[in-house]
Length: 211
Ligand code: C5P
Image 1: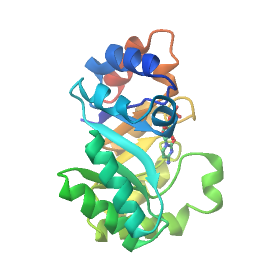
Image 2: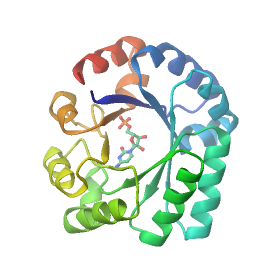
Image 3: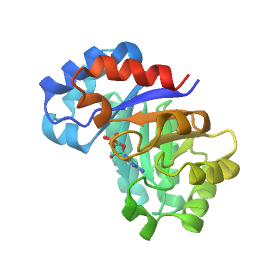
């Protein structure tokens, strides 16, 4: 079954704890990125980890190998169980994240193609395919691919085989949950859940769609 991953991009500890607590029964994992850790500090990771769900660090790590390693170590020490790295930096930088994640018993996902319109300017088509291939060669656990472009997800699946595809872009960015769910391993949903009048109900509805 396709997993449901909440993108918890709220800005305060209070909102994060409230939303995570209400939606947790319907989720398989929570993705935390810069909006929340810059707003509430890294200690929020430890607090949300208390819910018992896997936490994915969406830091889109994109630096030289040594800096990537240091960032990834911080993430796993804080309580994350997976990290997202950019692929355009090249195989040595990606390998640093993958190896460090695996040293901690965690996972690393590589952004192959992003979900917003501007992503088409640089990170699509042949370049995205090359990144996906490189991610597999580096031993990454999967890739990030856009729910807004199912035909691209299908093309990237041909390249990565049984590695996982986590896909953001459903709901607020226009991606169709029903269409994308059968093509991917994890559906990442942010605003359509945490901005909903009833976040728990919204999460429950998405949890039915992905079956
Ligand atoms: O609110 P929404 O559902 O659009 O949230 C999507 C989440 O996925 C955000 O945290 C965004 O940063 C992230 N993301 C994305 N596209 C990518 C990679 C990550 O939208 N290619």
